[in-house]
Length: 209
Image (tube, rainbow, N blue to C red; front, side, top):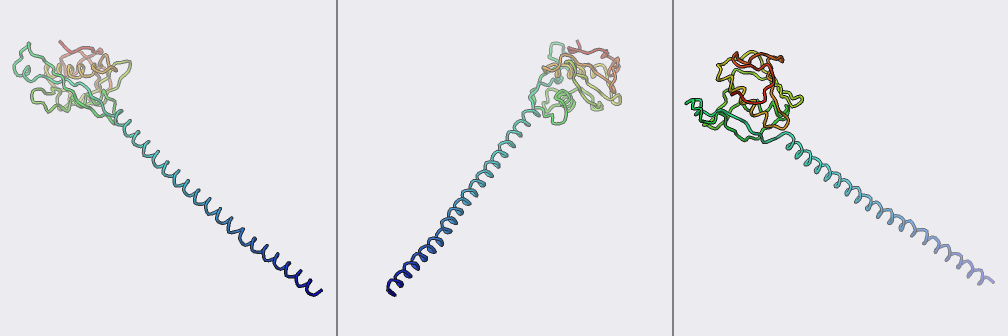
């Protein structure tokens, strides 16, 4: 009888040990699965962060390209033929075109063009006749009319200077699709003349003849 009891107790102990062993192994399997899931999540986060950085870089590049396109334009500027000024030969071209890339970050392209004309050119065969004393306030466009606004102070010159100041500006601006006529203003108001010689009371759509 004692023998049977001993066998029975041994069986119970064996079953208990087996159960404990299984219980100890189970958490290890779960821990392993959790570790793999964490690694996968970390990789996904890293991938998402890399994609976000790439998208930002692409957006920045596109923005820079767009900015360059908007703020830079090739235009045709008209300057006075020096040979005509020197000789007065009417057979010569009075205005000579010059292609130039104009930047206009903080102003309309029409204003940038007038300021470039006032700045002059590096070409020795042509020049600007706009007096250096002239000060431009601004240039605005409405209904295809460019309003070129000068300060009264500094508007001095002979008839030739006045004529070519008007001609250079008119000819250069009407090259744009946005401009058909040019109205000259002095201190924001219409005036009869710019320097005392030629009528500018109405919008002009062609150079002075």
